[in-house]
Image (spheres, helix red, strand yellow):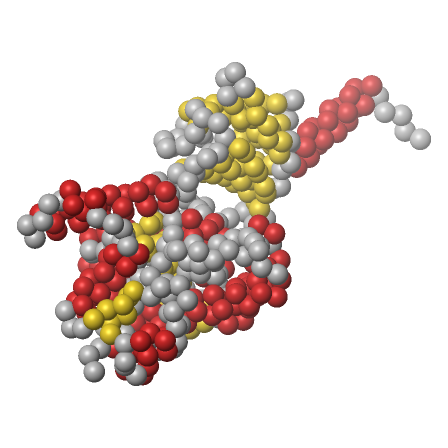
Length: 486
Protein backbone atom coordinates (compact mmCIF):
# COMPACT_ATOMS: atom_id res chain seq x y z
CA UNK A 1 0.00 0.00 0.00
CA UNK A 2 1.40 3.34 -1.07
CA UNK A 3 0.88 6.39 1.10
CA UNK A 4 0.13 9.70 -0.58
CA UNK A 5 2.12 12.62 0.71
CA UNK A 6 0.22 15.76 1.87
CA UNK A 7 1.36 17.72 -1.18
CA UNK A 8 0.09 14.93 -3.47
CA UNK A 9 -3.25 14.93 -1.71
CA UNK A 10 -3.48 18.71 -2.15
CA UNK A 11 -2.73 18.49 -5.86
CA UNK A 12 -5.26 15.70 -6.29
CA UNK A 13 -7.87 17.72 -4.44
CA UNK A 14 -7.24 20.78 -6.59
CA UNK A 15 -7.49 18.65 -9.70
CA UNK A 16 -10.80 17.20 -8.52
CA UNK A 17 -12.12 20.66 -7.74
CA UNK A 18 -11.13 21.83 -11.21
CA UNK A 19 -12.88 18.87 -12.77
CA UNK A 20 -15.99 19.54 -10.66
CA UNK A 21 -16.01 23.23 -11.63
CA UNK A 22 -15.48 22.34 -15.29
CA UNK A 23 -18.33 19.84 -15.08
CA UNK A 24 -20.57 22.47 -13.52
CA UNK A 25 -19.74 25.00 -16.20
CA UNK A 26 -20.36 22.41 -18.89
CA UNK A 27 -23.81 21.72 -17.43
CA UNK A 28 -24.69 25.43 -17.21
CA UNK A 29 -26.95 26.80 -19.92
CA UNK A 30 -25.61 29.62 -22.00
CA UNK A 31 -27.87 32.48 -23.16
CA UNK A 32 -26.45 32.97 -26.64
CA UNK A 33 -28.91 35.61 -27.87
CA UNK A 34 -31.95 37.67 -26.87
CA UNK A 35 -34.65 38.67 -29.37
CA UNK A 36 -37.56 41.05 -28.81
CA UNK A 37 -40.71 41.73 -30.85
CA UNK A 38 -43.19 44.49 -30.01
CA UNK A 39 -46.86 44.13 -30.99
CA UNK A 40 -49.79 46.48 -30.25
CA UNK A 41 -51.11 44.21 -27.48
CA UNK A 42 -47.96 42.46 -26.23
CA UNK A 43 -44.18 42.14 -26.40
CA UNK A 44 -42.32 38.84 -26.75
CA UNK A 45 -38.79 38.32 -25.39
CA UNK A 46 -37.00 35.15 -26.50
CA UNK A 47 -33.85 33.72 -24.89
CA UNK A 48 -31.83 31.44 -27.19
CA UNK A 49 -30.26 28.80 -24.94
CA UNK A 50 -27.49 26.26 -25.44
CA UNK A 51 -29.42 23.77 -23.28
CA UNK A 52 -32.64 23.70 -21.23
CA UNK A 53 -32.78 25.98 -18.21
CA UNK A 54 -35.31 26.32 -15.42
CA UNK A 55 -36.77 29.81 -15.18
CA UNK A 56 -38.64 31.71 -12.49
CA UNK A 57 -40.52 34.84 -13.60
CA UNK A 58 -42.13 37.26 -11.15
CA UNK A 59 -43.20 40.91 -10.90
CA UNK A 60 -42.10 43.69 -8.53
CA UNK A 61 -43.67 47.10 -7.85
CA UNK A 62 -42.41 50.58 -7.00
CA UNK A 63 -40.89 50.80 -9.52
CA UNK A 64 -42.67 48.37 -11.85
CA UNK A 65 -40.30 45.53 -12.87
CA UNK A 66 -40.32 41.99 -14.20
CA UNK A 67 -37.60 39.63 -12.95
CA UNK A 68 -36.47 36.58 -14.92
CA UNK A 69 -34.21 34.16 -13.03
CA UNK A 70 -32.52 31.31 -14.89
CA UNK A 71 -30.88 28.59 -12.78
CA UNK A 72 -27.36 27.39 -13.69
CA UNK A 73 -27.14 29.84 -16.56
CA UNK A 74 -24.71 32.42 -17.85
CA UNK A 75 -25.01 35.28 -20.33
CA UNK A 76 -23.00 34.89 -23.51
CA UNK A 77 -24.58 37.69 -25.54
CA UNK A 78 -24.67 41.47 -25.65
CA UNK A 79 -27.97 43.03 -24.61
CA UNK A 80 -26.97 46.58 -25.53
CA UNK A 81 -28.10 46.18 -29.13
CA UNK A 82 -31.59 44.97 -28.19
CA UNK A 83 -34.14 47.42 -29.63
CA UNK A 84 -36.70 48.18 -26.89
CA UNK A 85 -38.68 50.72 -28.94
CA UNK A 86 -42.41 50.08 -29.07
CA UNK A 87 -42.34 47.62 -26.16
CA UNK A 88 -43.29 48.12 -22.50
CA UNK A 89 -39.62 47.73 -21.51
CA UNK A 90 -37.68 50.93 -20.76
CA UNK A 91 -34.46 49.28 -19.54
CA UNK A 92 -33.03 45.76 -19.41
CA UNK A 93 -30.40 44.85 -16.80
CA UNK A 94 -28.57 41.58 -16.17
CA UNK A 95 -26.52 40.19 -13.31
CA UNK A 96 -25.23 37.03 -11.63
CA UNK A 97 -27.55 35.36 -9.12
CA UNK A 98 -26.41 32.98 -6.36
CA UNK A 99 -23.04 32.48 -8.00
CA UNK A 100 -24.18 30.27 -10.88
CA UNK A 101 -27.48 31.74 -12.04
CA UNK A 102 -28.54 34.59 -14.32
CA UNK A 103 -30.93 37.36 -13.36
CA UNK A 104 -32.55 39.59 -16.00
CA UNK A 105 -34.53 42.60 -14.79
CA UNK A 106 -36.95 44.42 -17.09
CA UNK A 107 -37.92 47.93 -16.01
CA UNK A 108 -41.46 48.50 -17.30
CA UNK A 109 -43.31 51.59 -18.49
CA UNK A 110 -46.76 50.06 -18.11
CA UNK A 111 -48.70 47.26 -16.47
CA UNK A 112 -48.16 43.82 -18.02
CA UNK A 113 -49.48 40.31 -17.52
CA UNK A 114 -46.44 38.02 -17.96
CA UNK A 115 -46.43 34.42 -19.03
CA UNK A 116 -43.51 32.21 -20.01
CA UNK A 117 -42.82 28.81 -21.52
CA UNK A 118 -39.93 26.83 -23.01
CA UNK A 119 -39.58 25.46 -26.52
CA UNK A 120 -37.57 22.47 -27.72
CA UNK A 121 -35.21 22.77 -30.70
CA UNK A 122 -36.62 22.78 -34.23
CA UNK A 123 -35.17 23.19 -37.74
CA UNK A 124 -34.39 26.88 -37.15
CA UNK A 125 -33.72 27.35 -33.45
CA UNK A 126 -32.29 25.52 -30.47
CA UNK A 127 -33.67 25.55 -26.92
CA UNK A 128 -35.65 28.69 -26.11
CA UNK A 129 -37.28 30.45 -23.20
CA UNK A 130 -40.19 32.65 -24.32
CA UNK A 131 -41.47 35.46 -22.07
CA UNK A 132 -44.66 37.22 -23.22
CA UNK A 133 -45.65 40.60 -21.75
CA UNK A 134 -49.36 41.02 -22.46
CA UNK A 135 -50.96 44.46 -22.12
CA UNK A 136 -54.34 44.30 -20.32
CA UNK A 137 -57.19 45.86 -22.28
CA UNK A 138 -55.21 46.44 -25.46
CA UNK A 139 -56.30 45.26 -28.90
CA UNK A 140 -54.02 43.44 -31.33
CA UNK A 141 -55.27 45.88 -33.96
CA UNK A 142 -53.83 49.39 -33.68
CA UNK A 143 -57.08 51.07 -34.81
CA UNK A 144 -59.81 48.72 -33.58
CA UNK A 145 -63.43 49.14 -34.61
CA UNK A 146 -65.74 49.87 -31.70
CA UNK A 147 -69.16 48.48 -32.77
CA UNK A 148 -71.12 51.16 -30.89
CA UNK A 149 -69.00 54.01 -32.22
CA UNK A 150 -69.19 52.52 -35.71
CA UNK A 151 -72.98 52.37 -35.52
CA UNK A 152 -73.21 56.00 -34.34
CA UNK A 153 -70.78 57.07 -37.04
CA UNK A 154 -72.79 55.25 -39.73
CA UNK A 155 -76.02 56.90 -38.53
CA UNK A 156 -74.38 60.32 -38.60
CA UNK A 157 -73.03 59.73 -42.10
CA UNK A 158 -76.46 58.56 -43.27
CA UNK A 159 -78.11 61.64 -41.78
CA UNK A 160 -75.56 63.95 -43.43
CA UNK A 161 -76.14 62.28 -46.78
CA UNK A 162 -79.90 62.58 -46.39
CA UNK A 163 -79.61 66.30 -45.64
CA UNK A 164 -77.29 66.82 -48.63
CA UNK A 165 -79.72 64.99 -50.92
CA UNK A 166 -82.59 67.12 -49.61
CA UNK A 167 -80.69 70.34 -50.39
CA UNK A 168 -79.80 69.06 -53.87
CA UNK A 169 -83.49 68.28 -54.52
CA UNK A 170 -84.66 71.68 -53.24
CA UNK A 171 -86.27 70.32 -50.08
CA UNK A 172 -85.92 71.71 -46.56
CA UNK A 173 -83.35 69.60 -44.61
CA UNK A 174 -85.32 70.28 -41.40
CA UNK A 175 -88.23 68.30 -42.81
CA UNK A 176 -86.13 65.15 -42.71
CA UNK A 177 -85.89 65.14 -38.91
CA UNK A 178 -89.61 66.00 -38.59
CA UNK A 179 -90.78 63.31 -41.00
CA UNK A 180 -92.23 60.09 -39.54
CA UNK A 181 -89.72 57.23 -39.52
CA UNK A 182 -91.05 54.15 -41.29
CA UNK A 183 -89.34 50.73 -41.39
CA UNK A 184 -89.19 50.80 -45.18
CA UNK A 185 -87.64 54.29 -45.33
CA UNK A 186 -84.87 54.02 -42.72
CA UNK A 187 -81.57 55.39 -44.06
CA UNK A 188 -79.40 52.70 -45.55
CA UNK A 189 -76.29 52.12 -43.37
CA UNK A 190 -74.02 52.03 -46.44
CA UNK A 191 -71.25 50.49 -44.34
CA UNK A 192 -67.85 49.42 -45.61
CA UNK A 193 -67.13 45.78 -46.39
CA UNK A 194 -64.34 44.80 -44.01
CA UNK A 195 -61.48 42.63 -45.30
CA UNK A 196 -59.21 41.08 -42.64
CA UNK A 197 -55.70 40.67 -44.05
CA UNK A 198 -53.41 38.19 -42.32
CA UNK A 199 -49.68 38.17 -43.07
CA UNK A 200 -48.53 34.68 -42.10
CA UNK A 201 -45.84 33.88 -39.52
CA UNK A 202 -43.96 36.85 -37.97
CA UNK A 203 -41.64 37.55 -35.06
CA UNK A 204 -39.64 34.51 -34.00
CA UNK A 205 -41.42 32.47 -36.69
CA UNK A 206 -39.78 33.43 -40.01
CA UNK A 207 -41.76 30.90 -42.05
CA UNK A 208 -39.99 29.37 -45.02
CA UNK A 209 -36.58 30.70 -46.07
CA UNK A 210 -35.59 30.90 -49.73
CA UNK A 211 -32.24 29.90 -51.29
CA UNK A 212 -31.06 33.54 -51.14
CA UNK A 213 -32.14 33.95 -47.50
CA UNK A 214 -35.50 35.62 -48.19
CA UNK A 215 -37.81 35.12 -45.21
CA UNK A 216 -41.45 34.33 -45.84
CA UNK A 217 -42.62 36.54 -42.94
CA UNK A 218 -41.06 39.62 -44.57
CA UNK A 219 -42.43 38.99 -48.07
CA UNK A 220 -45.99 38.29 -46.95
CA UNK A 221 -46.06 41.36 -44.68
CA UNK A 222 -45.04 43.57 -47.63
CA UNK A 223 -47.78 42.01 -49.76
CA UNK A 224 -50.35 42.34 -46.95
CA UNK A 225 -49.54 46.05 -46.61
CA UNK A 226 -49.87 46.53 -50.38
CA UNK A 227 -53.21 44.72 -50.32
CA UNK A 228 -54.44 46.87 -47.42
CA UNK A 229 -53.65 50.03 -49.37
CA UNK A 230 -55.64 48.71 -52.34
CA UNK A 231 -58.60 47.78 -50.16
CA UNK A 232 -58.68 51.12 -48.37
CA UNK A 233 -58.49 52.99 -51.69
CA UNK A 234 -61.57 51.16 -53.02
CA UNK A 235 -64.94 52.78 -52.30
CA UNK A 236 -67.02 50.71 -49.92
CA UNK A 237 -64.13 48.61 -48.56
CA UNK A 238 -61.94 48.81 -45.47
CA UNK A 239 -58.91 46.72 -44.47
CA UNK A 240 -58.04 45.36 -41.03
CA UNK A 241 -54.44 44.15 -40.64
CA UNK A 242 -54.10 41.12 -38.37
CA UNK A 243 -50.44 42.02 -37.89
CA UNK A 244 -48.78 45.15 -39.23
CA UNK A 245 -45.26 44.57 -37.92
CA UNK A 246 -42.68 41.88 -37.26
CA UNK A 247 -44.35 40.02 -34.40
CA UNK A 248 -46.16 36.72 -34.03
CA UNK A 249 -49.92 36.31 -33.59
CA UNK A 250 -51.36 32.96 -32.50
CA UNK A 251 -53.38 31.05 -35.08
CA UNK A 252 -56.60 31.11 -33.07
CA UNK A 253 -56.07 34.76 -32.23
CA UNK A 254 -55.86 35.66 -35.93
CA UNK A 255 -59.41 34.52 -36.59
CA UNK A 256 -60.56 35.93 -33.25
CA UNK A 257 -59.26 39.39 -34.24
CA UNK A 258 -61.13 39.14 -37.55
CA UNK A 259 -64.37 38.29 -35.74
CA UNK A 260 -63.90 41.09 -33.19
CA UNK A 261 -63.48 43.54 -36.08
CA UNK A 262 -66.70 42.29 -37.75
CA UNK A 263 -64.81 41.18 -40.86
CA UNK A 264 -66.79 40.09 -43.92
CA UNK A 265 -63.84 38.16 -45.34
CA UNK A 266 -60.49 36.82 -44.09
CA UNK A 267 -57.45 36.19 -46.29
CA UNK A 268 -54.15 34.77 -45.03
CA UNK A 269 -51.11 35.38 -47.24
CA UNK A 270 -48.20 32.90 -47.37
CA UNK A 271 -45.32 31.75 -49.60
CA UNK A 272 -45.02 28.00 -50.13
CA UNK A 273 -41.87 25.89 -49.79
CA UNK A 274 -40.69 22.39 -50.63
CA UNK A 275 -37.52 20.37 -50.06
CA UNK A 276 -36.82 20.58 -53.79
CA UNK A 277 -36.29 23.85 -55.73
CA UNK A 278 -38.42 22.64 -58.66
CA UNK A 279 -42.07 23.19 -57.57
CA UNK A 280 -43.53 26.59 -58.42
CA UNK A 281 -46.85 28.39 -58.82
CA UNK A 282 -49.64 29.89 -56.73
CA UNK A 283 -52.32 28.01 -54.76
CA UNK A 284 -55.54 28.91 -52.97
CA UNK A 285 -56.91 26.96 -49.99
CA UNK A 286 -60.28 26.91 -48.25
CA UNK A 287 -61.26 24.91 -45.18
CA UNK A 288 -61.94 21.23 -45.81
CA UNK A 289 -65.33 19.73 -44.99
CA UNK A 290 -63.63 17.46 -42.45
CA UNK A 291 -61.95 20.48 -40.87
CA UNK A 292 -65.28 22.29 -40.75
CA UNK A 293 -66.93 19.31 -39.06
CA UNK A 294 -64.22 19.04 -36.40
CA UNK A 295 -64.34 22.78 -35.82
CA UNK A 296 -68.11 22.69 -35.31
CA UNK A 297 -67.58 20.02 -32.65
CA UNK A 298 -64.89 22.10 -30.94
CA UNK A 299 -67.09 25.20 -30.88
CA UNK A 300 -69.88 23.22 -29.29
CA UNK A 301 -67.51 21.66 -26.74
CA UNK A 302 -65.98 24.98 -25.66
CA UNK A 303 -68.12 26.66 -23.01
CA UNK A 304 -67.02 30.13 -24.06
CA UNK A 305 -68.37 29.49 -27.56
CA UNK A 306 -71.76 28.08 -26.61
CA UNK A 307 -73.25 31.56 -26.33
CA UNK A 308 -71.14 33.13 -29.06
CA UNK A 309 -72.74 35.16 -31.83
CA UNK A 310 -72.65 33.30 -35.13
CA UNK A 311 -74.76 35.68 -37.19
CA UNK A 312 -71.75 37.19 -38.95
CA UNK A 313 -71.65 40.95 -39.37
CA UNK A 314 -75.21 41.47 -38.15
CA UNK A 315 -74.52 39.53 -34.94
CA UNK A 316 -78.21 38.69 -34.71
CA UNK A 317 -78.08 34.98 -33.90
CA UNK A 318 -77.16 33.79 -30.43
CA UNK A 319 -76.75 30.21 -29.29
CA UNK A 320 -77.23 30.77 -25.57
CA UNK A 321 -80.93 29.87 -25.58
CA UNK A 322 -80.65 26.83 -27.90
CA UNK A 323 -80.40 23.18 -26.90
CA UNK A 324 -77.36 21.13 -27.89
CA UNK A 325 -78.93 19.55 -30.99
CA UNK A 326 -80.17 22.87 -32.36
CA UNK A 327 -76.84 24.53 -31.63
CA UNK A 328 -75.17 21.80 -33.66
CA UNK A 329 -77.55 22.27 -36.58
CA UNK A 330 -77.17 26.07 -36.59
CA UNK A 331 -73.39 25.92 -36.41
CA UNK A 332 -73.29 23.29 -39.15
CA UNK A 333 -75.48 25.42 -41.43
CA UNK A 334 -73.39 28.51 -40.71
CA UNK A 335 -70.11 26.71 -41.36
CA UNK A 336 -71.49 25.17 -44.56
CA UNK A 337 -72.65 28.53 -45.90
CA UNK A 338 -69.30 30.10 -44.98
CA UNK A 339 -67.41 27.27 -46.68
CA UNK A 340 -69.49 27.65 -49.86
CA UNK A 341 -68.73 31.38 -49.96
CA UNK A 342 -65.03 30.64 -49.38
CA UNK A 343 -64.96 28.24 -52.33
CA UNK A 344 -66.80 30.72 -54.57
CA UNK A 345 -64.45 33.58 -53.72
CA UNK A 346 -61.47 31.23 -53.94
CA UNK A 347 -62.37 30.30 -57.50
CA UNK A 348 -62.48 33.96 -58.53
CA UNK A 349 -59.18 34.71 -56.77
CA UNK A 350 -57.55 31.70 -58.42
CA UNK A 351 -58.74 32.86 -61.84
CA UNK A 352 -57.20 36.30 -61.28
CA UNK A 353 -53.92 34.91 -59.89
CA UNK A 354 -53.61 32.66 -62.94
CA UNK A 355 -53.25 35.79 -65.07
CA UNK A 356 -50.15 36.83 -63.13
CA UNK A 357 -48.43 33.58 -62.18
CA UNK A 358 -48.51 29.92 -63.06
CA UNK A 359 -50.97 28.00 -60.88
CA UNK A 360 -49.54 25.17 -58.82
CA UNK A 361 -53.06 23.78 -58.45
CA UNK A 362 -55.77 24.56 -60.99
CA UNK A 363 -58.61 24.44 -58.46
CA UNK A 364 -59.24 25.63 -54.92
CA UNK A 365 -57.65 23.13 -52.55
CA UNK A 366 -59.20 22.26 -49.18
CA UNK A 367 -57.31 21.58 -45.98
CA UNK A 368 -57.79 21.85 -42.22
CA UNK A 369 -55.65 24.96 -41.68
CA UNK A 370 -56.29 26.36 -38.20
CA UNK A 371 -56.25 29.93 -39.49
CA UNK A 372 -59.28 29.22 -41.72
CA UNK A 373 -61.49 27.91 -38.93
CA UNK A 374 -63.92 30.75 -38.33
CA UNK A 375 -67.54 29.55 -38.44
CA UNK A 376 -69.02 32.77 -39.79
CA UNK A 377 -66.34 34.44 -41.93
CA UNK A 378 -65.51 33.20 -45.45
CA UNK A 379 -61.76 32.58 -45.37
CA UNK A 380 -58.95 31.76 -47.79
CA UNK A 381 -55.26 30.96 -47.45
CA UNK A 382 -53.26 32.08 -50.49
CA UNK A 383 -49.85 30.60 -51.25
CA UNK A 384 -48.47 33.33 -53.51
CA UNK A 385 -45.64 31.15 -54.83
CA UNK A 386 -42.79 28.84 -53.85
CA UNK A 387 -40.11 30.78 -52.01
CA UNK A 388 -37.97 27.63 -52.25
CA UNK A 389 -37.85 28.04 -56.04
CA UNK A 390 -34.96 30.45 -56.91
CA UNK A 391 -36.80 32.12 -59.81
CA UNK A 392 -40.04 32.49 -57.87
CA UNK A 393 -38.13 33.76 -54.82
CA UNK A 394 -36.64 36.49 -57.03
CA UNK A 395 -40.07 37.50 -58.33
CA UNK A 396 -41.65 37.49 -54.85
CA UNK A 397 -39.02 40.00 -53.72
CA UNK A 398 -39.84 42.36 -56.61
CA UNK A 399 -42.18 45.21 -55.65
CA UNK A 400 -43.79 45.41 -59.08
CA UNK A 401 -44.56 41.71 -59.07
CA UNK A 402 -45.97 41.91 -55.53
CA UNK A 403 -48.29 44.69 -56.67
CA UNK A 404 -49.59 42.61 -59.58
CA UNK A 405 -50.23 39.69 -57.23
CA UNK A 406 -52.23 41.72 -54.70
CA UNK A 407 -54.18 43.46 -57.48
CA UNK A 408 -55.18 40.03 -58.77
CA UNK A 409 -56.05 38.89 -55.25
CA UNK A 410 -58.23 41.92 -54.53
CA UNK A 411 -59.74 41.72 -58.01
CA UNK A 412 -61.18 38.32 -57.16
CA UNK A 413 -62.43 39.44 -53.74
CA UNK A 414 -63.96 42.68 -55.01
CA UNK A 415 -65.61 40.92 -57.96
CA UNK A 416 -67.43 38.58 -55.58
CA UNK A 417 -68.68 41.34 -53.28
CA UNK A 418 -69.79 43.51 -56.19
CA UNK A 419 -72.03 40.65 -57.30
CA UNK A 420 -73.01 39.58 -53.78
CA UNK A 421 -72.78 42.62 -51.46
CA UNK A 422 -73.81 42.26 -47.80
CA UNK A 423 -77.29 43.83 -47.33
CA UNK A 424 -76.16 46.78 -45.17
CA UNK A 425 -73.12 47.69 -47.27
CA UNK A 426 -72.52 50.67 -49.53
CA UNK A 427 -72.17 48.29 -52.48
CA UNK A 428 -75.63 46.87 -51.74
CA UNK A 429 -77.08 50.39 -51.62
CA UNK A 430 -75.48 51.25 -54.96
CA UNK A 431 -76.83 48.05 -56.51
CA UNK A 432 -80.32 48.66 -55.12
CA UNK A 433 -80.31 52.23 -56.39
CA UNK A 434 -79.42 51.03 -59.89
CA UNK A 435 -82.09 48.36 -59.75
CA UNK A 436 -84.77 50.81 -58.66
CA UNK A 437 -84.39 52.58 -62.01
CA UNK A 438 -85.11 49.30 -63.80
CA UNK A 439 -88.17 48.22 -61.78
CA UNK A 440 -89.89 48.25 -58.38
CA UNK A 441 -88.07 47.07 -55.28
CA UNK A 442 -89.15 45.55 -51.98
CA UNK A 443 -87.31 45.42 -48.65
CA UNK A 444 -87.88 42.07 -46.91
CA UNK A 445 -89.78 42.21 -43.62
CA UNK A 446 -89.85 39.65 -40.76
CA UNK A 447 -92.01 36.64 -41.71
CA UNK A 448 -91.69 37.12 -45.48
CA UNK A 449 -91.06 34.16 -47.78
CA UNK A 450 -89.91 34.26 -51.36
CA UNK A 451 -93.09 32.60 -52.66
CA UNK A 452 -95.33 35.05 -50.78
CA UNK A 453 -93.39 38.05 -52.14
CA UNK A 454 -93.62 36.67 -55.68
CA UNK A 455 -97.39 36.08 -55.35
CA UNK A 456 -97.95 39.51 -53.83
CA UNK A 457 -96.29 41.21 -56.79
CA UNK A 458 -97.67 38.86 -59.41
CA UNK A 459 -94.36 37.49 -60.70
CA UNK A 460 -93.17 33.86 -60.95
CA UNK A 461 -90.76 32.75 -58.23
CA UNK A 462 -88.22 31.68 -60.86
CA UNK A 463 -88.28 35.13 -62.47
CA UNK A 464 -87.89 36.80 -59.07
CA UNK A 465 -84.86 34.61 -58.33
CA UNK A 466 -83.31 35.33 -61.71
CA UNK A 467 -83.75 39.08 -61.35
CA UNK A 468 -82.00 39.03 -57.97
CA UNK A 469 -79.36 36.38 -58.76
CA UNK A 470 -80.68 34.06 -56.04
CA UNK A 471 -79.52 30.44 -56.10
CA UNK A 472 -81.97 29.23 -53.45
CA UNK A 473 -84.96 30.25 -51.36
CA UNK A 474 -82.99 31.79 -48.48
CA UNK A 475 -83.69 35.51 -47.93
CA UNK A 476 -82.75 37.90 -45.10
CA UNK A 477 -84.69 40.57 -43.26
CA UNK A 478 -83.64 43.97 -44.62
CA UNK A 479 -82.55 42.55 -47.97
CA UNK A 480 -83.87 44.52 -50.95
CA UNK A 481 -85.34 42.56 -53.87
CA UNK A 482 -85.85 43.98 -57.34
CA UNK A 483 -89.35 43.18 -58.59
CA UNK A 484 -89.11 42.67 -62.36
CA UNK A 485 -91.78 44.06 -64.65
CA UNK A 486 -93.98 41.35 -66.14
